[in-house]
Length: 321
Length: 118
Image 1 (spheres, rainbow over the protein chains, first blue to last red):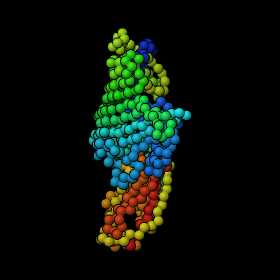
Image 2: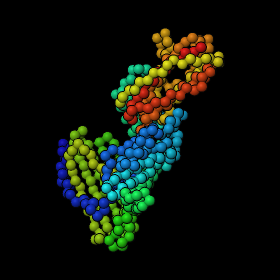
Image 3: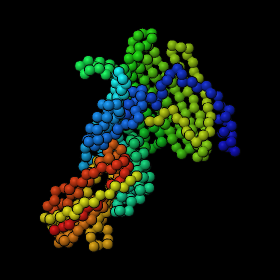
Image 4: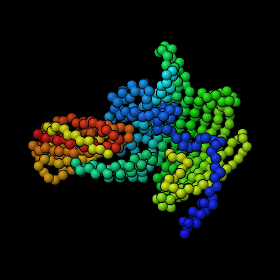
C-alpha cells in the first residue's frame, strides 16, 4: 500500500519542465576521458589498437599513420618483475604507471585530421579500510589460484569483478588529461600546412570516503576551438568547472551536480544545477525523480523546476564518474 | 576467461647451503597463486603466496624433484604481460625469470615448472 501511495505521489509530480538548452554541458562532459585523444576528434574510430607489447606498439603506430586509432600506457610495454599487486596501494603518485597516450588519424582525399591526447593519475590514495577490502579479495583470488590445475574460472571471474570495483574507487584520486586536434593537407612533405582546430585540458578530483557510500567529485575543463564567435570574431574558449555528489545504497541512488561555464570569448557565465533520485521498488521497477535549474546572466533570468517519473529497469543519473 | 597453459623442462639446481628457501614473485601487478608438490609424495607441500619458504635441508632435498604449478590472473587492465620470478636461496641458481603474455585482459596463465635438487 505504501508503495502504491509513493507511485501515485511521483505520478502527480510528473511535470516536465526541465530544460538543458541554455547550457549544453554537464558534469559528465567534464570527466577526464579514458582516451582524450579520441574524444575530441568528431569521427569515432572503428577500432582502437591497445598494444601491450613493444612489437604490437610498433604495428599500431604504422596503422595510425595510415588512418587508425591507438591508446597505450607506455610504462606497461615492458615487464616489471617486482611490481606486485599490493604495490597499487603503496604508490600514491602513479604518474608514469597511469600515463596513457591516445591518438587517432582520419584521412580524406585532401586532408588528414589528427588528434593526440594524454591522461594520468597525479594522486591515488586508498584508506586503510579500502586497502583491507582489496587485500581480502586479493587473498581470495590467490587461494582460488592455488589449487594446481583445478581452476574455478567462474568464481575467479566474479572475484576479479569485485577486486576491480574496489581498486577503481580510491579514497582520493586526482586525474589530469589533455588533448588537441589538428588538420594537415595531404600535399608534398615540404609543403604540408598544419593547423590546430581544438584543444582541451581536464582536471578531476574525487573523494570517496570509505565510511559512507558518498562520492564527491570536483571537475574542471578548459576547451578551445578555432571556431569564431559571431559577436567577437575571437576563437571560442570555455572554462567549465563543477562539483557533483553521488550517494548509493541498496535501493536508493542520488546524484546532484553544479556546473559553471565561463564563455571566455563572449565574457558570459552560465550555471546549472541538477539532480536525480532513483528508488528501486524491485529489480524491475525503479522510480525516477530528476530536477534542475538553469540560468543565464544575459538572457532573462529564469529558473525551471521539474520532476519526472518513470518506471523502467534502468536507473537514470546526472553523471557517472 | 581463458586459461593458457605452459610447461617448462625440468631445471637442475645444485644445493650450496644447509637449507633451501624459495620465494616466488608475481610481477606486473598481477595476482597469482602456487601449489608445490614433491614428486612421489601425494601430499601438497605448500600453496598460496610463497615467500621465503623453507623447502628443507640439503640432506632432505638431495635427489628430489619439486613440481610448482603457478596460476596467474591478469588483474592489471594496462598489461597482459606475465612475469614470474623463482628465487631459490641456498642453491647455485640465479633468480629464474619467466615471461609470457595472455591473449585477453582477465585471462589466466597456468605455468608448470619442475626443479630437481642435486
